[in-house]
Length: 258
Image (cartoon, rainbow, N blue to C red; front, side):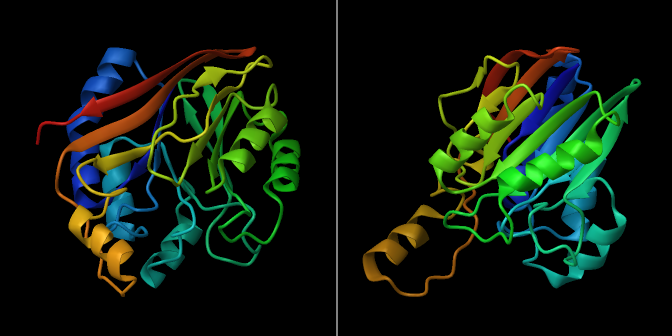
């Protein structure tokens, strides 16, 4: 099984970057699954039905979200009826959408789980306990499980990686938009990275026009942020696995010529 997980797609430039590079990656690596974090795909913050459909149309098998999942109210009903999109499972039970899903390719079933950290971001339940509950529910229904841990604190992400080692095929971190250098397969067979990074403009400040971000830091005033249009890159991880868990993991940091 070969799985590509694409880090936070930021705005229109991120979507165009993914569209330009994904076909080649799918062919080169003979991918079985493509999972995309799309929580910043609509104008740099949040997701809409339009941008979600665009990502699915590019070939994403599932879309994960994060703390901006509910930024655009228009997407709420779509989250309820589109099973290929998941928001953090440890959000309130009655909130729009679902926290996990199962997608299938060539007879292989992949469980996709989205979790939110609790340090510096909002979630109503522990991601550790939530992961336990979901894995119990998925037992026997999947061949592999991918967890997107959307969190601010590196300690929280590292901790859940070790907590899930040997229980899921991959546990990948998202949210900070900066790729970390710790991709590896843990001893129990779980591919892990603290943050995959983002797919979008490296020429900005985590996706925002750099002059606007700098002004905000210099003045502490309410600066309107816009998505940068400079230096697009795709940040992703490629995970290979067999029945015993992940066997190989590779970090992909690729510039796009648009």
